[in-house]
Image (tube, rainbow, N blue to C red; front, side, top):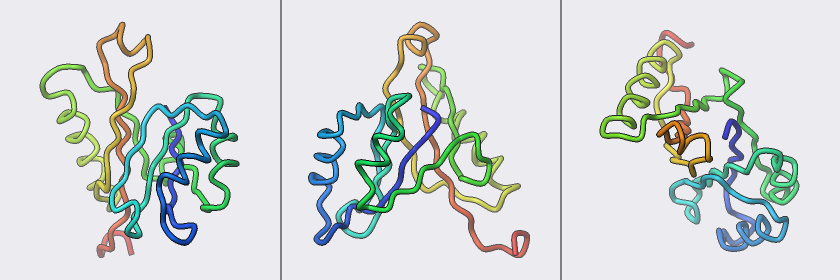
Length: 140
């Protein structure tokens, strides 16, 4: 769960069902999905099962997706493996918010993913946090 594809759902007219049908027809298994205003100009975020990134990007090609990686510090994408207990999500957000202060970013959205067998065994939940740059004197 280290990658995320983001795009608008507009292929005139916006229709999230048609977008997800393309993903289904490509045989891509999703580990997390999120977004807001997905049929009102917002974005949908999709996390494919490991190894299915290329198939997802091919399926989404008409939507001009961007592929973000937690390995790229400029992407704004953070992966946190939260303890599956009260306060686990808060700890992830607290750390990301602190990191964002130094980078001139704010949190845009959060995806809570499906636990892998390893995650279940270690009592943790995969969470992706997407942050975007804000305009401040410090980052101009």
